[in-house]
Image (cartoon, rainbow, N blue to C red; front, side):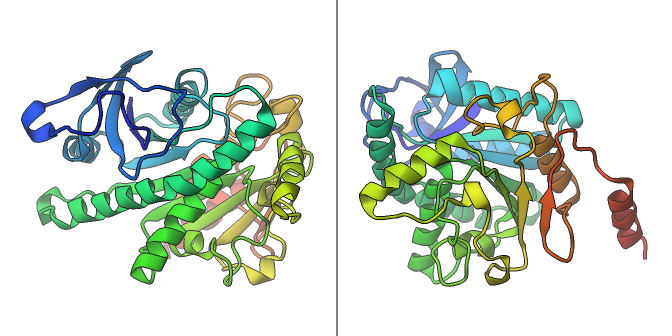
Length: 340
């Protein structure tokens, strides 16, 4: 499994992949200081990792059989082995189950705190999420530089999607904001950006807010929200400390859809989030309560497969049912549109 992280390996950052080849690396999970650099790595097996460098990493992606990439940005209080890598493995299995060799899942790992105490971890992880923007903005720069140097016959045309969960949305928002402020705009790099249980304020995607860079960078931005997400209730209470009392995007969806760009969609997941992930109702983007592909995953995969988001065209909203299935009339419209 390939992964990218801004955790500095214990072995340090003095590494020349073109000369040294892959090198074994380890990470101290008690050190949550984010690096301004990113490290392009492979998980060989549980608790066994190697750094391979950006060139080898990107070339491996270029020649991979899959024609789409799903970057997975995890939420707060997540650690690599008990949380992030198993979630990535599950997402990859779900994608392969829907259509083999279509999507390759790559986790972006930022350093969550490893202390005891949820509230302390929450505040510490907010700081770390903010600082992680430096490294991941550099990652985007490396990718664009690498792509610009590719010959036409070797160029990478894979579609790139992002799944940001919980506080991972804060990492994504600040990364793209940093890129946009540095260069004046962000390129439309992504086909779909999926914001699940987003722990950012619900006005974030409006044109005068910093999250508008998310909308500029993608063809589609899909917000999955649930009003009874108990983890986000805790988040709202915790943010009173920072004098932020606005609703979270993952609770209510966008505050006012009329103030968001036309490529933003709001998907209501109230019907099933607590049955998929009891009792918190926060991690509901993979399996349902029967350990089969859940409604959110099916909806996301349809968007990756077709480039279109199933919603009510008049409102850009959809109440997602517990046992979601792609409507035949939606597929018929897509077929008709592709065969004028």
